[in-house]
Length: 110
Length: 122
Image 1 (spheres, helix red, strand yellow):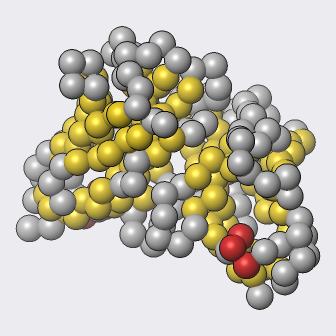
Image 2 (cartoon, chains in turn purple, orange; image 1 turned 135 degrees about the vertical axis):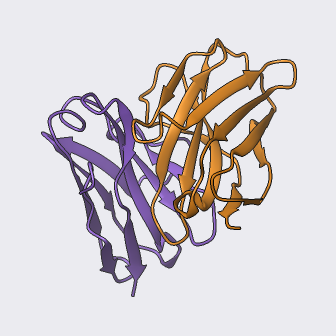
C-alpha cells in the first residue's frame, strides 16, 4: 500500500479542467508541504508545483496546487494536448523518515 | 544554468554493487544552498526516492534501501555518487540525480539529470 495515493488515471478534453488528488496521512501531507511533478512521455520529471501551491518560474498559471488536511490536489485548467503526461505528488513522511512519491496519475487529453 | 549528468555501468550482475556518479556543472556541489539526491524509476512504474546528501556528508536514505545504500560527495570533481549493494532484478530502473534547494521541503527537486538506465541481469 502506497504512502501517498493517487488515482492511476485521469482524462479530459481540450479546454476542460481536471483535478488530480493525492491522499496521505497525518505523518506526511498533514504536516509537510507537497510538491507536484510532471513527466512528459520519455522525459525527465519536472517540478510543477512546490510548497503546496507555488509555481516555479515558467510554469503556466493554469496549473495550481492546494492542500487540505491530509490530502492535496493538482488542478489543470484550460487543458491542452501537451499536458498529456504522468503527474506525481511528493512529500516527506515524519514517521517513516523518507521522501515518498505518489504512484502517479496518467493524464490523457482526449 | 545548473546541469546534472549521471554516469555508470548500464548492466550490473545480481548480487553485485551498482555504482553511479552524478557530475554537476554550472554550479558548485559545495554550495550551502543545495542538497543532492538520487531518484529511480523502474520501467513502466513510478518514482522512488533513494536518498539525499549535503556537501558536508549529511545523508538521508530511504528506509527500505538504507542497509544497501551509500552516497558520497567528491568536491574536487564536483560530483556525488551512489552505491547500491546486493542488487537484484528489482533494482532495474532509470536512475536520476537531482538537486534540492536548501530551505525547501525534502521532496522538492528543481534540477534533474536526464537519467541513466541500469539493468540488473546475469
